[in-house]
Amino acid sequence: MSRGVVSLARKVRPAWWVLIFCVATAGVWQRYEVVRMARTIELTQARITVLRRLHASLSADCSRLAARERIETIAVKQLGMSPTTRAQKRTLVIDSSVAAYAAGE
Image (tube, rainbow, N blue to C red; front, side, top):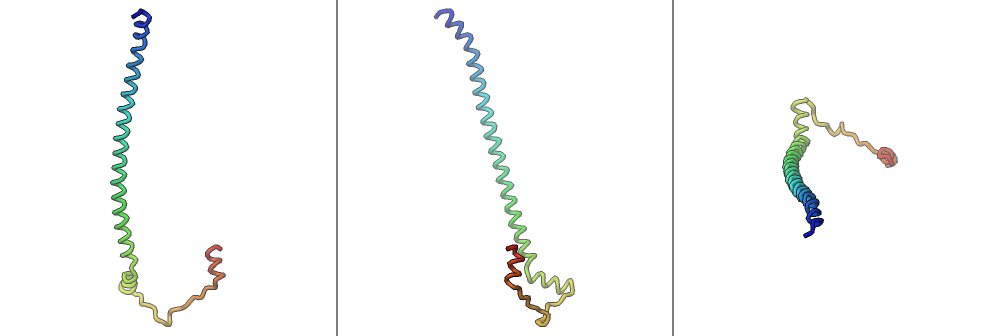
């Protein structure tokens, strides 16, 4: 080989090491990011599961608390109220134009 080729090889050789180092670093960084994202996804899925269970529990509580029989029992026993009689009931007739106005149409 001529001295020019050897000289050129010596100049280029460090550039290859830099390129190899950059590619290796990028590979390690990419692997780290994939593992980090997988962990984030796992934690988010666990949180979604917990929140779905909480939602189901709260929906059941809401249904139980809003039961007509429960409300009537509390009204009669704790608040001393009595059910309405037929004479106390009134019928409210709403004109369709009033209902349309109330709905914002």
